View 1: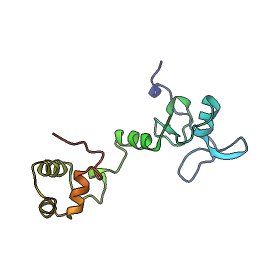
View 2 (view 1 turned 60 degrees about the vertical axis):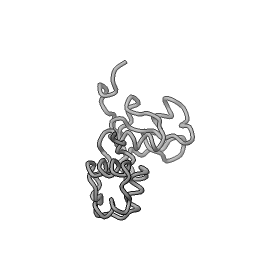
View 3 (view 1 turned 180 degrees about the horizontal axis):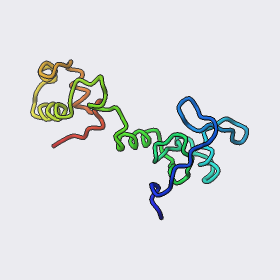
View 4 (view 1 turned 135 degrees about the horizontal axis):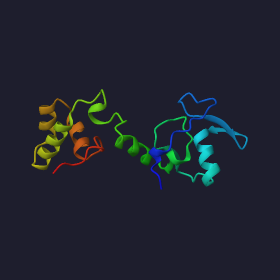
Length: 143
């Protein structure tokens, strides 16, 4: 079977949504072109799933470029492709990936959250969120 990258995008030639997705009527209702295309080829989209683009081209309706996934799958796909603004790519972050590694290592070795917060110029709750991976979830623990 050919790789999806070997198949060119098939952009919707009509109207688009404000977010750039192809917009059309399907079964009497307004929907996006890629969702209608999926439904025509594979049937109804199960609850809790969305039609995602491998190609990241919003107006594309090429069936080989589409896959079903959860919102989390779609976000993971975005992060895997480097299109997210997590970590250092987020313009509001105060820490670098190297500092995150240092903080987590220091915490494992007994450093207090308060001391680490002072050292890195952030509050202790920020350190706690980071240690528990409530923030920087995309950045794996380094051993």
